[in-house]
Image (cartoon, rainbow, N blue to C red; front, top):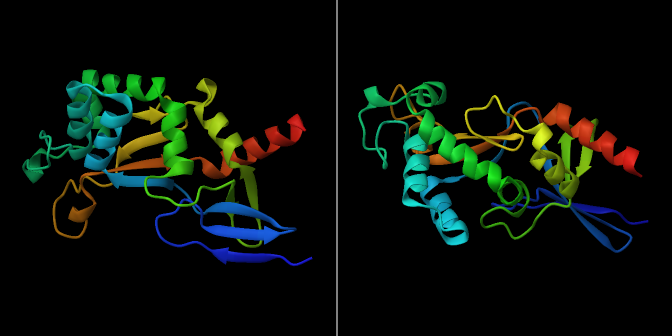
Amino acid sequence: MLIQAYKVGGVNKTDLVIEFNSEQYNISIKKGTGNSVHQEKVDEFILFLQKEYGISDELKDDILYFIWGDGTLDGTGNVSDRIDAPEFKRKYPDKVNNIRTFFHENKKDLIERFLIKGVKSDSSPDYIYYGTPENGTIVNAKDALEWLADDKNEKTRATIPVGRLTFQAWNRNINGGDKSEYKRGAIQLKWESFRKDSKIIAKGNKNDQ
């Protein structure tokens, strides 16, 4: 039996392809803690939401306001006006609730885009692997999607959850300086309990068989 494996580069959601018995399996690989599963410029994300969902100007502005976190819609505010997510939630609960409501109503489709489809990906994963080459857990990507979008698994304590994922700014660079300024104006989706959750998903899949 010939088994072949090769890496997939670029912006693809698939990191590794394994071929054997004339079958091909696309794998997304995760490791470590605080796993980021998606990043993109907020302006690109807004265009996607306008095209696919026809979002209101109010929701568009609320998302921009949240991601920039400096009291503006385009990141031109003073460094001294930049605030983190918990403070934003305290100051602007209505904006946060507006975003949360939309994400909750559309979470399954959004999670699929963040985790599986991507923005410019030419290859979507069939499976997601967490761990090292020696030890890890593998789950079916569709099973992961269903679990992440299940209401009972929603990360309700997050400022803005998308199912089990957390929606946040990549980096607001609150203290200023040049080192992280390029990270501003981008969204980031995190699956912070990936290691624990992947084991639950894998175990549930075995119980269903």
